[in-house]
Image (tube, rainbow over all chains, first blue to last red; front, side):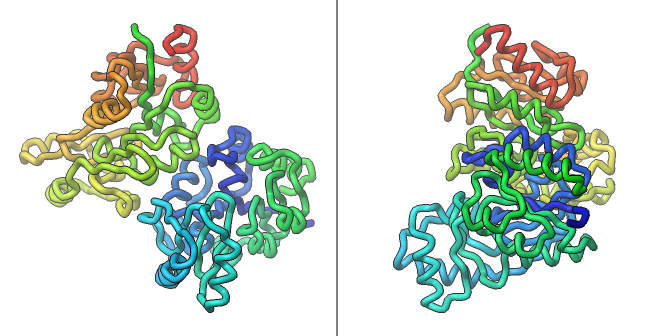
Amino acid sequence: MGVIRALVVDIDGTLSDQNRVLCPSALQALRRLKVPVVLSTGNTHCFTRTVSVLLGTPRIFIAENGGVLSYSEDEMEILADLKVCEDAFEKLAAEFPLQKYNSARYRFTDIALQRTFDAKAADKRAQELGLPVEVIDTTYAVHIKDKRIDKGTGLIRIAKRMNIDLGEFAAIGDSNSDLPMYRLAGFRASVGNAGPELKQDSDYVAKAEYGNGFAEIINYMNEKGMF
Amino acid sequence: MGVIRALVVDIDGTLSDQNRVLCPSALQALRRLKVPVVLSTGNTHCFTRTVSVLLGTPRIFIAENGGVLSYSEDEMEILADLKVCEDAFEKLAAEFPLQKYNSARYRFTDIALQRTFDAKAADKRAQELGLPVEVIDTTYAVHIKDKRIDKGTGLIRIAKRMNIDLGEFAAIGDSNSDLPMYRLAGFRASVGNAGPELKQDSDYVAKAEYGNGFAEIINYMNEKGMF
C-alpha cells in the first residue's frame, strides 16, 4: 500500500447524514487533513462549488456524476450531453412516473429525479430501448446520465490535471455511483451506511455511518500511516 | 424583550471563518436550535440553497442581498433588476478596475465583484451619476445591487410569508449589508469580527469572532431564555 496523496470523496451520505445535513465530525476530520480532497457527486456544479467553499476543499471537483468537472474557480469542463438525457427522459416518462428536481435549472448534463419510481426497471428499459444513458439511484436521487461518463471517467481527468497517480487516490463513498472511482483508486473505504456491493469492493468499511463513518475512515488512515 | 421565534442570519463571516469555511461550532449551534433559521446573504440562490441543505435550515431564505427570495424548494421570487446593475457596471467600469466573480452565471439580480477597487468611491460616483444602484462591500465581495432592495426588504416579505412578526426575529450578522435587517428585528447580535457601525446597532456583541461568535450568541440567547 503506497502513500495516499489525495482523496476523492462523495458528499451525500458520506459527509452528510440521511437528511443531507453535514455531520460536524466530518467537517472536523476534513479540516485536519493535509492532502487535497476532491469532492465527487451527482449534484450540480453550483452545489458542489458551494460545498467546497464551506468545507475549504479545492475548487477541483467532479459534479453531475462526471458530466461536469471543475479544475479551478475559473475553469469548468462539460463532458456529457444533456440532450441524450432529455430524449431518454421523454421516452421513459411515457412508462414511469418521473418527476424532475428543481435543481434542473442549474444542471448542465444530467437529470435528477425524485425517487418515485423503480430506477432499476427504468434502467433496464433504457437499455432495452438502446438509449445511450444510465438510470442510477444514489439513494438521494435518481439520475439519468450520459452512459459515457461516470465518477471514474471524471477521476481520470482530475488525477491527470493534479499530476497525481490514480493509485495515490483514496476513494470514499456510500453508493453504487462511487464504484467507477473505487475501481481506479489505490485505496477504497466505505461508510457504514454504504450498500453491500460497495462494501464488498472496499479495503476498509467503517463501523460508523454517514459523516461519523467518514471521520472513522480518516482516523484509520492516519493510524495506518497512509498519508 | 419578547420571545424570539426565528433567526435571520448572515453566512460569510458569521457562520464561516475569514476564508469562508464553515466553523464547526456554528454548525453545532445551528443543529441545537429549535427555531427556524432564515439565511440572508449577498450570495446566489444556488449557493444559499446549498448552504441550507448542508446546515439543515429551511428553504426559506434571502439571497443576492434581497434581490432573490426563496420561499420553499419550489418557489423563488426575483425582486430586483439585473439590467440596472449591468448598466451601472458598464458606467463604473470606465472609471474603476471592476472584475466580476465567476458566480455571475448563477446570479439573477446583482453583480458580485472582486475587492480590487475603492467600493466607497465607486458608490459615491454611482450616486453622483444618479444610478439606481448601491455599491456595497461585505468584506467578502463588492456588490452592485438594485437600490430598491436589501436584506431588510427581503426580511419583510419573508416574515410575512412565515407569519412571524418582525419583532420576533433575531438578526445576526457581521457587515453593513446586515444593517437593514437589524433595523427591523426585535433583537440584533453581532459576531466579534463585525464592523463598528454594526456593533453600535447591536443588543449583544460576541467576544468570539466568526462562527465561534455565532455559537456564543446562541448560548447567550439560550441563557437569557429568549427562545
